[in-house]
Image (cartoon, rainbow, N blue to C red):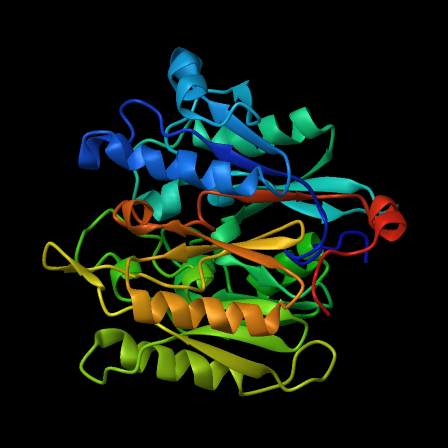
Length: 354
């Protein structure tokens, strides 16, 4: 296939982020203090690899003062700051060079009213990188897909098949476009997202079911899954059904998937509203992993131990993701990794723990 998306543990050139702009939802929600979590995430990642932060020009000085001096700033107008979703999907082309899939971004199915600037960010980043652009008519976001690098992608029916995103598209049409742009041959469809992310409690805040709080490949054939053991919690049944989907058939290489559950933290209600605190929302970095934490000593420690066992060669650091999740996402949602070319990776090897 011409284009192949490498897995997230593939060696990175850098991580891309976006500084929450004035007038965006993140600042409006909590008087601006929540943006400190973006700075903390960037500071954690820059210990492992370069970080480039997109920032609205009028906020350049404010962002510079708040961020680690090693973080590079690039001026770019923004509506919001979820780079995983508004940035390009980086793939390798037939020569092994980095290319950028430019999906359509429509504000998570118009759950956001303002997305005109964010819809241009994928092409902006591609130009900064010097990557060729692969256009796509599919409305999609980076948080809505998870690949293993060996032909398998996990998605949810409530995202790519949502009428507000891709009206009239059949499952077969979506699969064909994912295969064309990502180089996959097997699409695993989960049923839906976690309850809070389905916008049932805060209309307009949520993605309608992104996979990056549900499941993430740890390596080919092994999937970390969000676990909710409380039968009274609405996500208990959600995850039971999603687990059935993950175990229903083999991956692209014919393997049955091994699932590694990671229990949700206990403090999942904020101001009476269920929040999708999930340890699945983590980011691989070169020789490390940046995990979301939630001021839950027991659950945080258990998640860290799970990651440490799976990735004994990676250094694991935590970032308090509660301020990020108050706004609808986590560490993974605000970061977008740029992989190195296949040629450079072959010269330098992988940082992923085998």
